[in-house]
Image (cartoon, rainbow, N blue to C red):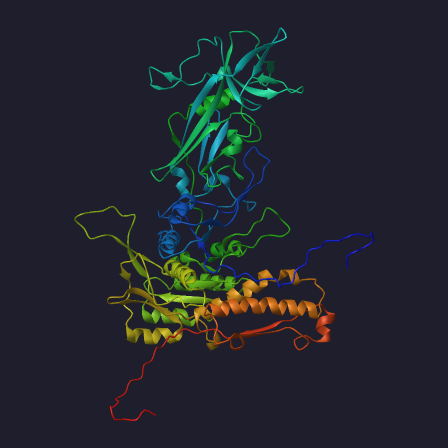
Length: 633
């Protein structure tokens, strides 16, 4: 208890209310798969450098525009030996946002080429552009992939006005640099009153700097600024009245076709906070979605060599040497967990998504690239990811491509889980990448349904809540379903836990099923499983304060009150049965739920029972004849 040792008035804060439980978000989607480029964990030592580069894992995007910037859009992906190179993950992201989704985590999977030591081979998968002769630095694609071969880099220079100023105080004249700091580059001109024009009249382009006249500003031990030449020799600031020094900066442009154009202005050439090697470094650059990075090795190039190399980029040049890696396998999609004993081994694939606590829905659209047996392996990995302890998420499973009703039933028969839902059939859309041909029918594309279903999950959660079954909802952005599932055909699919996508005349294309792939009738419905995941995750996250609290009646009462208050709020949304809270749930945390052995071993056990609402899957109206003179019983 608090100590009161000195006489006086003590004002203390206390709380007379229970700790509240906040419901977690349920509409955040996570996907793993191939993309054109984008963040993917890799570890390497750049040639000539002793730095280990670690690139982060899942990236959060909140619109398809953000996805395109981070991962490159809808173009083909995968190595040349991949029979199906459609960008299923990108199309799934597009469908997710089009159907109401708001938050998407993407974990890119990439099958790297590895060297003899099992490390990523920088020369095989990453596009590069050496600059200078001999090369003094290299522009490298920040992410692996063949898309890097289409990255074009160009550079230009800008000069400010003379930064050498003369001041006279108490009869003492000093010459100082204004507006620059250590690491900045300056260009020396013999006549400060006759500086060259910025534009070369002959070429109508900015006048290039003279490499031999470029110096780097350095700070001396006494705090004054001086100039360093290409050989590292340091000279004081000129003290004559004629010399001019112009601040020289570079602008780097990075272009990827007509899809993306990035400009980085005002880059310094030395060791400066805005130095070209710092703002465009491999690890944690200023632009965390930059396409390229500047690899200068262990030391920055001499200023004249760097200026000469960048002058060669007045006309843009393309990177080369990037590839799509080796063959995609389920092992690449599943990934590896992080090594707790090695900071250089971050999680990859699905294991990386497992580190993002916010994700509530997951999918792996690229599993449909494989043959049926291999797809089953990838699907089992996805289900195992959701069934892992404290995962709190559900998977959306895609059926095999071009599968008939018999084939999808065979596929479903090999799975049994309440943590996944299967949707059938595939979906057809107009191909947004095809060029319009007035003389031909519009080009179409067949896609797996997981991205569309995930968007509807998110839309239903936002509009109604996680307790509402994500069914009888319109699927947006499609032309039709690949197979026509009729009433009679669904009577075969529905009891087996295969959710049908159906077209209804006058009511559009809809999801017409809300079942998991579980044989346990308690967990038959998607909304029931997701409601329990929501409750479990919310209670887990908001009761961490109870760990190591004194395990007595006061703690038990506080826990009961917190959970009851939370469940009352959930009941009021319509998620639980009952006309009053006592009929909707119970919370017990007392001597009836714990033995003395539990208390002696530090266990506090709380028993919670809830009565979820089940969807009205079969709405039955019974109608019979009734005559006017009949007596109503």
